[in-house]
Length: 170
Ligand code: OFO
Image (tube, rainbow, N blue to C red; front, side, top):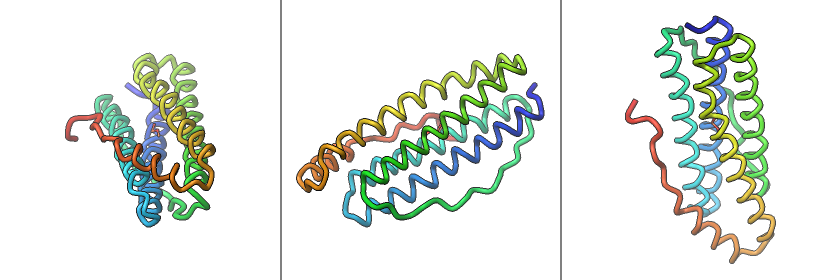
């Protein structure tokens, strides 16, 4: 059984994950409107993954018989100066999410909540991967600068990303 504090903290994390989804949906639209369909695809996959992250927390709360309170989701930005600017914002956001996950881990440790501590390990690994992905794309965009050929090639590359559902139909 979860403490009330942990229950609320995880509900807040659901809000964070759904905001992430909303932010990446907004970025997907931004890239679509620029004609960068590969970038838009990458963000669209990311948007779905974030919903899965939220649902993984949601299902965990249900499995623990916890109460679920859904908090309000803020409006994300909808304009960025450039693809590089958007990916820098993505990395910054993921670094914030990593801090949130670390905060949950700290709470689980403090409360000696072994089940939640164990459950959170998946998110720790996931954050390492997400930050690395963003850094890779930022590195490429930095190399490309204003070169439209380079941007076109990267767009083709990002078009390859495929969504694999984390949780079978929830
Ligand atoms: Fe982008 O990360 Fe969720 O957890």
